[in-house]
Length: 265
Image 1 (cartoon, rainbow, N blue to C red):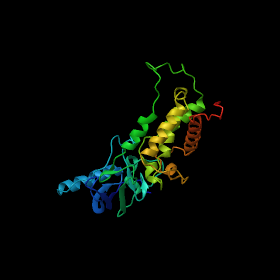
Image 2 (image 1 turned 30 degrees about the vertical axis):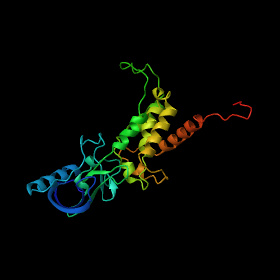
Image 3 (image 1 turned 120 degrees about the vertical axis):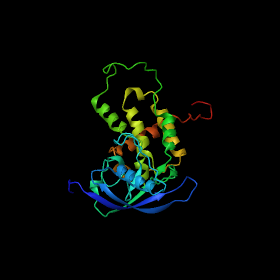
């Protein structure tokens, strides 16, 4: 790959869909003069400017921070969520990874729980429902405590921080052949479960979030590990095993005691 600047002429095949209740289809566009230093989203900005100059409807896509932090960018590029580079969000993908004359296929996340809102934008409100079910602690912590008032072993702090790196983009769902959200849920659980503040509600939180995930219509994990490969923050699938153990414990602990014929527990 050359680092020298060049302008690219590209053929884009983009999913266009006017609304959630409308039929969608791929549409082909030519975009010219894209700098190899531009980001992928800047390339789409250039396309939209060219479309608007011709009086055509611009392509709708999600973006916000454009720094790989917010998780808003959500494109399947040539069949891969966030594109060809591992550990990279769509907004961090640059056009120097493509060649002049390339054809690029751009689609939204494909999952039943992520209905298409318009073009490349999907409704990820199902993630919000999962977080609302238990992704918090309810103890009254008051103002920010001193950093050393609650001692946390470094190995636990590191694991919590690794899990907290999840930006809730949904690439794991888009990559999974079952549209499973288990890596997302496992990460949100793990970043609390590795800290003292997360322990009192650990069992209740696990059951509530897993049940919210199932109710939202996400599929089950069958160990394809596509979620781990697609995650732009390299969240480990090992957290799924931790979530499964916690869920099994919480279900077992929540079972009512069986009574014998004489009424004893």
